[in-house]
Length: 277
Picture 1 (cartoon, rainbow, N blue to C red):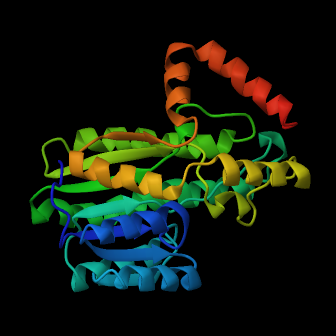
Picture 2 (picture 1 turned 60 degrees about the vertical axis):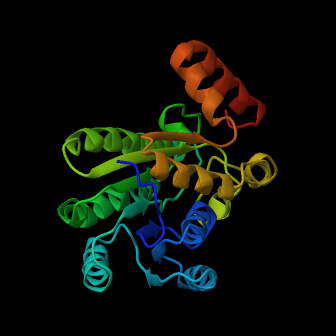
């Protein structure tokens, strides 16, 4: 379902305090949409709420952990009571992890799945019924990653969490075929956001120098989150089901599909060059 006119629509963005989430919130606000924002970081959320409000649209913002079932249920109840059914739900909140699997502590796997997968499931489970019941064209946007279809060494668990988002989104889209709600899954490549600087992002197998190199790569080679936000808005307007955007994302997608062995060799060689293998 495409949504041609965004002015006056209600758009919820999770993980809106920085990076892709912040840029997406502002991109929708510039189109005249009213925003509902959530993030785990209250200080960052307050700043984005002020930026959105300055654009002349309404904005409800709450600090919420998307992996907390009770907190999300309370959040959904408040949203439905105050603004009604969403027109667009953007499940964007996510965390990253880089590190060799066998040296990664189990709590790092749990954190990835709690936020990256359970957060998306919670958003869809709690907001979709009202979206369907309200009628009219509406859309769910789930943020995955290019690692969902073309992962790399040291990002195996992160890639698995994003593959889950991709697979879930594709299946959900089929389940919603006879409803008024469409599904878009976004697969960004390397994006210049604070995600690689977040706490606990580097595992024990990643040295301080390697972590610094990774951060520098994302900072200097990564695509602007504003470009991802534009792609998301365009995807909602056009009703696109798959959005691939960002540094190396599209080439990786095509090479992995058409020449999987070549992609594998390239990914391994690049990781060895960077000292990760």
